[in-house]
Image (cartoon, rainbow, N blue to C red; front, side, top):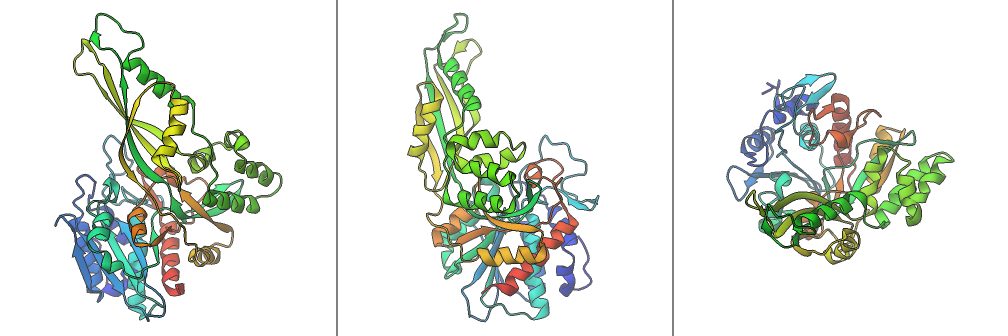
Length: 442
């Protein structure tokens, strides 16, 4: 680990701190976040913070602390997870848990998702304490385990067993949002204000079974093939939700004519797919924000090489737009599936019903001041975060990990992938922005 000159200057070295966190292998499963959380705990207690370590498993703790405020405003929460996804089967330029610094970046699993944000938050608190700054309200820091596998040991556990610690918190800062994105030659800073809902369903397809030597036409295997082909060829209908409408309208206002006129047609469902097909790689970013999505992720069936199975099971990862239910999605899904099937909801985690935009202007102004060339805008995240759990306590999460990135750095492509890394200047940009949030919060 890095040997800091003294406890007060840690916040000046975010790249060194990130390297330290990456070197803890917190691949989930199994997680084993304890050593990483203990390291953060030592930094905080060494700077005078009082901390709590709580969890349902001693090897998977969550850290809670707070910077005391003046009491003029409700508490603000900063939270992030230190567990990471696997690197199995990936070929890395630099070992994923060495925290290598090369080509102006810190490389390693978790560099983007989301140990970099934990570093930004940690530095904001440490700098505030070192400079003797007292914020308007308490600033709560939560360092979490288990986000990548459902939050059962992390955010879900805290909400269900330690919800009183988060009393009176109205706004929180979490992952995904604040990284620059380029559309039509304009630099944009999407800030997450809402997220889709996760729904895991299992489809069962039936057909006659029999001996493998006597082929069966139209059986369960054939139905599975038709279903997978339908999912590959068709998408569910377009829906323009309020957040996505606001996002696209903001982008349109930042673009010159005629690009703005073309992109505005995304808001008209009969034209949406036509415009998406004109957008190249940006299509991947915008498409899931405009519809419910269904992805086949696992298929099961058969148990012997010479027996034709009578049942095939397909697990589907469904992401629903805010306000939609599994029943709504089933109707859309059956319309394109093209075959008979039984559908079972394995799990569904509804998202918050409302969006509180009260902190958005502050976040947007911080980004404008840091980079006058960028345009902040609200964003719907096509995935889910721990925000869905804190939403149960009435807490509005904003995805805010500020990074000023070059046009050739595709943030989303590097998350969970080989050679995950963050440019050091982007990390420092975010560290300054997070500190500004603590200073400006009212």
